[in-house]
Image (cartoon, rainbow, N blue to C red; front, side, top):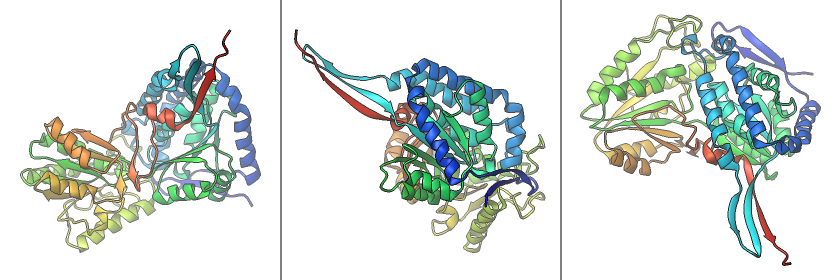
Length: 460
């Protein structure tokens, strides 16, 4: 009996799109086609692969007028923000620009007797499992460099953003990327596990929940298939006494609330030096009170519904538990809050790390703010988490930020900014955020394997 995946729109709870999953046999056939064509794809000149990938990226951009409202229907982001093509293009373009230097042979030495070097060899078939919250940008992080490096790619997108993979495949195929080189597939969890366990792939890149990442690693156990994971976070902001207060408020609160708080590197907890604490909270509350919650298709809406009622209910539960334990909620319930996917953004004070809202990933429009008196106290609190994706430090002192950053268990340290992915830097995490690294030269290293050449010359 076939299984159907359904995207339930958070706008009104209707079924926006549905697709049948592939059978186990059809899924393995798709992986087989990807493997059969990989060597031919890798044999193409690097610049040809780059040009085809960037043509595919441009073709996605040409669809943007259709994509923006589609995203609003699927996951609730307001149309006023214009979609993801800016970041999508920036990331792919950077990886295209650095491909030659990143994939070039590493010369070890050559003399009359020996020539020695290391090549970067594509893994083969790369399986990309992408999330719904930034569905285009998270997918392109791996799709573009994997294809450029000479891998074939199979993309499985989240059910909440069911049409994104189809869009990307359509665009890339129209630009000349062969259909078997880049495939979009709809799969059940069981067939996904069977494919990984059956060595259908040579590398798996997963972005999603901790439980999902654990399932990927369990499926790959014993196969020696590489698995890269980015599993979210509980990212902190720390506002020091010399910070630009207005800039800190604007950036950190935007980082906590944008996309209805559904950002892997969104700000979920803020620590403010006691000298700035009261002013920070007052300014933050005013910012959030000015938001307009509503239908994401309305150009006036600044914060849309969460992608799923289930996600909103988890955030409501965390807030209710915190208030019951003594936290203070500063935002009165918005009129548009329907008790379902449409959720009032919230700022909490008098919070502690005994509360789930300061420990568990919220992935919604809520942030707890705590007062601190020193760097040491802030560092201890920032490190008191099972996650480690990013941390945002606010100070005028670069050396101090570097010292504090060195002490934080995290993948990326920001100073005077937050919630941004620089494609020139490795996107990585630690602890339960997972292992691996995307983008930058390191992203290419993770999507290839080293192959060493030790060539002895024959005299005469």
